[in-house]
Length: 283
Length: 350
Image 1 (tube, rainbow over the protein chains, first blue to last red):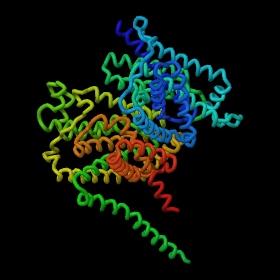
Image 2: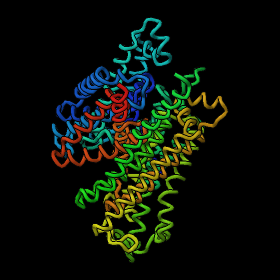
Image 3: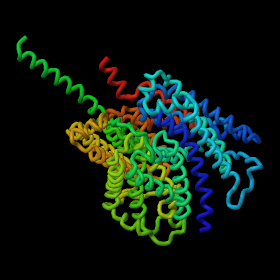
Image 4: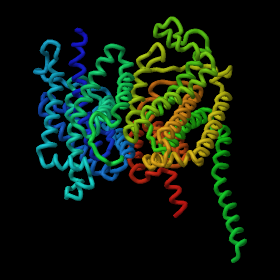
């Protein structure tokens, strides 16, 4: 029982990181059908931003959002927008981008991992809950609330939902879908930057930081349903907990296999993920 | 002009066409046969390695180019084949495999014992991947999970397998995998003649699989496969079951990857998780894209070209390769989505 309780914050904080990463992915994937493999490198960019701003942890969250967001924006404008409707091609394209960015990080910051010093006020914790993991969970919750408010309360968010549900109809109604795409990509990539800063609290930063999380984050998107905020939250929490308990009960090497099998089993009941936008369209 | 004239003209055209079409296979065949006389043992070994990758690429060409299933986990099947073969080779030496001694395993694990039999090992190398692919295909395709979802799932499988292999050190050799193989059916693997023989075996296997795959694509089944790629729902409305069509192709491509893995191990002399994870799996998909995904020959060509490019560039400037590789994908995907074969075709028709 004690072990069960001890694993809980670990699982939830893994889920929180996955959620921060998957939030961006689920919208770029859901709205534009883009599988952005370079998303992991936006996480890395966020983490290095925190590394470059030592002692400025909270400001680095904001800076990382804009750094990663700007990178996403450039990627979208220069390359991805020519690929709409070819999701599988965007996957390969963005993988090329991710390779280049990783090598760039290696040349700029060196191949070995670097450590970012966590701020003093995050040391310690309440009982079994370390402050740093609590902070990550809080950050994820704040991001979800922020995204939700953006989606339902702002006119940009409303446009975004419209484009996600029916791109052509949205365009016919006078929405500039290109601009909406840009903004979605900016916000989605920016969230990856925030996730990167959060990751510096739990581990070292290296050029291949993003690759460790990207596969799991995509699984969250698949299990949660495309472009679904609720789905992403539940799936991230579920996969995070499953990951940590599977690691604990079997061993670390089997955990990923168990998670994979669980996702496949889950898709037998919900092939479209937890939540879907209901539509009469065939595919 | 009377009717027979037209017929004769058509006949002549056909003959010229056949000649034209036969040139390339003959040329390639000559090159393959001449290769051992043109290069030293080291280069020949490299070529044999690329041809192993070409077999995997052929499978990807079949599943992705023809069937529209972007599989990012071919490394899994390649790995199952490779590890089966490596287990046989290790057991052939007699005694406990070296890495087991190092990691403190005292008795041969039960999982290993049947692999002392070469027939079992080779059968597992091919049938194991096919079985896994069939299972995964049925579970996934029946639920109409496809496209990007399928790609992500196969990638997750590749990631999971690598972690599993690294973690089970005593069974698999962990991160280092298995190496130091000495004999294959009593032939010394260090001998140049053995390696030359292996090269021919790989080349012949690749040629046979290529011809088989081409025949498959040209058959009724192949048309159905392409139809599924281009309009799965329409095919379903016509009364076919796209899930079965896709699963069969996916299983065939997995079997090819498994066989390629089994050939790779004696040729290269090592199998390790680094050879079959997310990155190597993706690299081969990109090689297929570079060669031209819609033509089976493009897949083979892409694997060999990218293999050479990688070796040549990483010999010159180690870090530059990643930039170049990345830039190459971006360029190919934006400027020539049909790859080298697409460019050749366009040049021919223009």
